[in-house]
Amino acid sequence: MSMERDEEIKRWTARRKSAMVMEIIQGTTTVAEASRQYDLQPSKIRDKGEIRP
Image 1 (cartoon, rainbow, N blue to C red):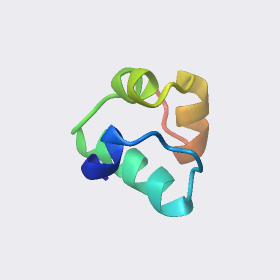
Image 2: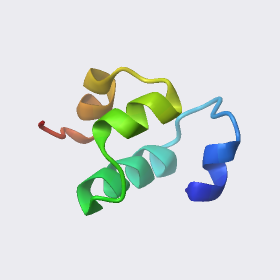
Image 3: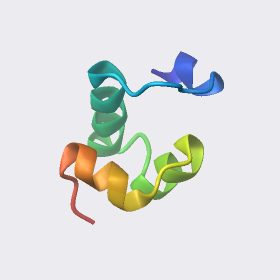
């Protein structure tokens, strides 16, 4: 997924969602970092993967 970070994401596929959630779970990134990077609200990221703060 890191290669896709440089490109603007136009559509959130299941693969992209799961890759982002796995990065957060593995500690590669945080919800706050992903929120800024993908221009998403933190609550939307938490909803995608049912991640709790």
